[in-house]
Amino acid sequence: MSNKSKGEMVRGMFNDIAPTYDRLNHILSFDVDKLWRKRVVRIVRKLGAKHIMDMATGTGDLAIALARNIEGSTIYGADFSSEMLAVAKQKIEVLGLTERISLTECNAEDIPLVNEAVDAATVAFGVRNFEHQKEALTEMKRVIRKGGHLVVLEFSNPRCALVRWFYRLYSHYILPAIGRLVSKHATAYTYLPDSIDKFASPEAFTALLKEVGFDNVERKSQSMGIANIYIAHKA
Image (tube, rainbow, N blue to C red):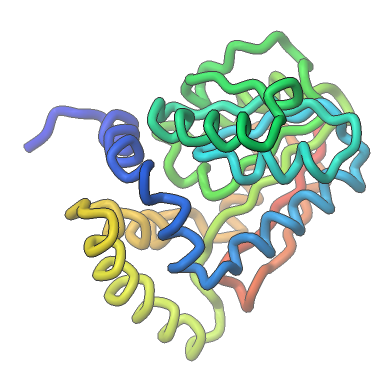
């Protein structure tokens, strides 16, 4: 039995799969993840945010999309996986965005930013991987200015029984098989669907956002409930 914490195990897993993460993500989602990120960018742009923290930035897809589509924006990308950040750094350099996007390695529960440092914070597919979700959300709220927003994109289980059946068949059987074949990692693509199953329901996660002090929480269902975008305001 491993004595490692959830955070240590998840960090090690993401470090291992970093080289193939982007390719597999887009293949396994049929590129729908790109559409969802575009919607997050549109929401953040409409909110008028210019200084943005992208927590659990991974290989930088959302941070890059924010920088390229929000004029005058500066992005602070943070993640606990050094190997994922290394991939993000390469992509950012190739695109000439090093002056717009800065990267740092840290946990979501301990962000090295002063209070109210950003207009908005984003998290795409990262909240369910946080070891201490309430503490991480509280810490993100700390670095968002008053009147700012947290925008979370996260997977969920569809409500429609037929859609849920097909989704579970794909995520629990087909996705892990392809993931193991391409990434050569035995457990990563089994962990991912399991983590979705264990994640809070949309109602419970909305309640958690309110519990840590956000208000006016709005939820936008994506692709028949496969994912949700949550928009939470800091009063």
